Amino acid sequence: MSAIDIYPKSVGSLSDPEKADFSLPFRNDWDYVHAANLGVNADGILLPAPVLETATFGLPDSYRQFFPAIQLAVAHERDVRQQLVLDRAVLTIRQWFVRKNNSQQNQDRIHEAHQDGDGRTPERFYTVADTASTQYFPSLVPHEGNRGSVKVGKHEPLVEFRPYDVIHASAQTYHRSPPMPRDGRRTFMRLSFKYNPSQHFPTIGSTMRS
Ligand SMILES: [Fe+2]
Image (tube, rainbow, N blue to C red; front, side, top):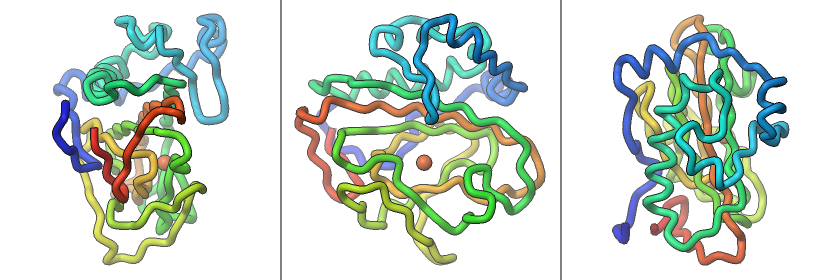
């Protein structure tokens, strides 16, 4: 792919049966994850590059409900990463009950947007949620060299997507987990790809040329 892509953007959506599966109660069997020899850190599960090439992404069966979303993200990433050398991919799953007007991420800091990456390392990420899909603020200038967090006003321009859309962005793009429209369980998935920092990775504001 040589065209300039504007970020964030949707790279696809789940089918109706895939949506139903995505929102199923998640059996987070950490013992089995350890047994499968996948690294786990505070951010999620480290997926080594070779396992990302397999049909099940090296994940245990308990993650099957997320395979279609992972597949959309991985397929797009393979398409755009070109010569970049993958350092690591991290999968994060969050599923729990959230009160109306609270955010799954920051209960009492719902008016803050943040960056996932500091810009020192080439990094892109994908998010999917079954409700209150991640909101992006591409007009906020990236905070270089540090992961930034800023308050966003009511009228800050933002980009929204439909639930179950797989959304692609630079890790430097400000975003937030928005307030829930109602009480309910929220299922959220993030898959981030971090590349070797020595690789060429041009950025223009919060957009990237692929
Ligand atoms: Fe984030």
